[in-house]
Length: 242
Length: 242
DNA sequence: CGGTGAGTTGATACGCATCAACAGAAGTGG
DNA sequence: CCACTTCTGTTGATGCGTATCAACTCACCG
Image (cartoon, rainbow over the protein chains, first blue to last red):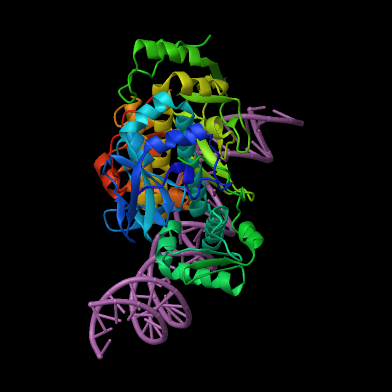
């Protein structure tokens, strides 16, 4: 039994732009169902052209690209509110893969409806473009981190971004948020080796800035984290929720 | 005096999706003018919210982000056909800057018209989303190059991408395309030092794979370049031209 | 109770950064 | 016209940041 959008558990967070009742009603028609997946389940894979697009409602996932020889670049961590598969939606081809990390609940939308959305709901179409532009913006930031910043700086950037996002989802409790990934995932996101990632995390712990262990990230000094990560815009801006 | 879209010098290349006459007529109304800029001129800058968006018609440019301390990440090279400023268009805020490298001719569009485009021309709105998704896809590829590949591999990837794109714009003559950037620009794109970039280019020259000098890139062995760059999809796919 | 996966830590190696010096081309002012 | 500077490209010497290798711990699981 699928949740109606009007009862969406995350829609009312300040992180998301608020919709009128009519708009929520439209979303309910656009949503064709819900899907729950086990941990470590492939959701979309590179090269495929899924008939569906998703929005993460609950749980954590990973967006990544693989090279032939097995090297992996993690493009982003997926949190509740993230749209999954827009690429396949508009370009008919995924160039990256998406896996769940924990068990997840996903809203399911029909790719065929995309076109009718563009024809009939220009405001939602605009939101889709907004989301695509926002992903582009994020990847530009990531590129800058990996290309220009030291391992330590990149890690501060990544952890502060993650913390701020989960905080906006009100998942924070006493400066701590759930972060159920492996160190290898962060290593692959930052283009670092596992060992060096581990040692850099240890340094952050020693210096009492942040502590990521046992699936939780605790940030003792968010200001230091943001400064050392050369973070530009601290707080996530309100985004459309499709 | 501004060129009518129907006489657009690049629109008929196979690189671009072809429009009906009615659609071209609409583009002519959407286009408010043309702008030419000198080499090394700022076109858009990070933080600003330009009232205009552009399409490059002629010339070469750079998209980049600066850190406070002056480090620079080049996000992409801008070639004819590229849309500039979509971010500012939909998100009302540029997070990167765009400069011309050579003199450029740009088609100018009015940001205010964007919304009317979404309301009245869903097919063009769809194209905008397509373009944003395509930029995202490109940055994901770049991230994978910088994060996972060796300097040599990244450079092969970059040069082959550039060559294929300029080839699609029919700027190639006997395996050679214009590429009027400095080595520093490529270095900043790949997150490498200038010196190492120079040495890697020298290696490609020695091995008779590719030769970038005096503003031209000559590719002797495109296959080797693509293999060593671990390039996934060799040819650029047809894109909308806004 | 062996096996597997995640995290940790120390030793060593190497890719790339940094430093330094020079050459050639192009611009600039006396 | 020539000194002079500035910019870009080139090359060699040295050093650092991060990768790689290896070994161990602990938790979990069948």
